[in-house]
Amino acid sequence: MRRGLRGRGRPCSKIFQVSGEERREQRAKGKGQRKEGRGQRAELTPQKTNQNKSNKSINQNKSKQIDCSEWEIRLENLWKFGEVVDPLDLPLLDTLIKYPDLSIQPFQDMVKGMLMDIPGLGQDRYSNFDELHLYCYRVAGTVGLMMTPIFGCAPDSSMELAKEPSLSLGVAFQLTNILRDVGEDATRGRIYLPKEDMDKFGVTEEQIFANEMNENYKDLMKYEIGQARKYYERAKRGIPMLSNDSRFPVQASLDCYSQILDKLEKNYFDNFTKRAYVSKEEKLMTLPASWYRTTDLANVLPLWGESRPAKVVGRGAGGGR
Image (cartoon, rainbow, N blue to C red; front, side, top):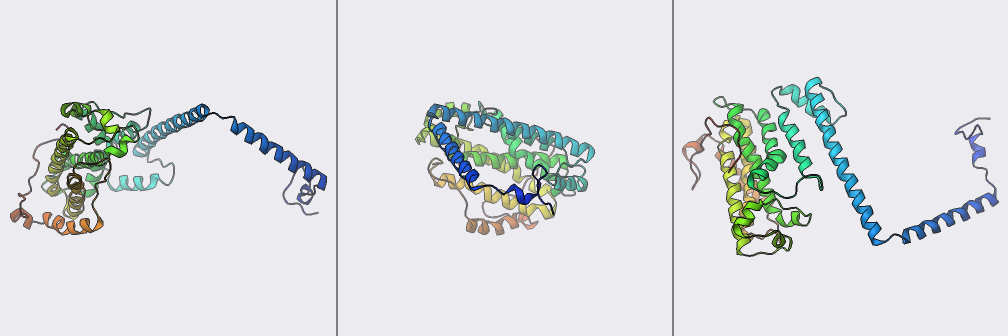
């Protein structure tokens, strides 16, 4: 007899030869188990349910921490030995081969930034701007440092000179995200606004969690928007340092994303009930001006109301306001 799936040495055709009485017994047993399960679920109290959710959340957060630790090890092995764990590592290895000067440091720092966002294990309050700047550097400034070797530099510039404006652009983007999402972050129990600044303008955590708008809060938003724009200005000075092919996409990104701050102002600084965003049409309308700013002609004839582009000379990548 031909044998297929095996069950304790019996032909598979005999495994399924169950009598009618056995089938009835199995169905009755299954019903009893389902009733018992329903009874057990009914005994779960709200307290037990919340505890289960809390335990699940803790386990998920610990899992994220382990994942980040594993990524740190994978990065080190990839940089040192070219070791690839899975297909996700292949694009990075290919990039590292093409750009051997690519530093591992911003990649490692980004992982540390991810750890800062893990609930219960990371950080959900920031005492001052220096703490916030460190977070912004890790989660966004690092991207600028990763991309600079790939973008390439102009003949009269260098990677060292381009570091600070590249980092500044990432920080500017992240500060913009934070100011746009104050209300959304509050629903997750997070406040990224520096406490030092909140105290300065008389804004409390309770006010933010209650989505309460007043003049104090608007003054705080005006101040923080001003801080973000300083980083955009620093980043602008670095665009002429990039290779010709890279200037336009970076300039366009800067011009489009910085408009979110303009939208926040037009919303009267309400980031609790309104979301500041730039539409596709507005982005498309921005592109011609972005392109012009990257041309040599813009150095001689800048756009109306703008000054000639300036370069950062002799400065390293630093933080602060």
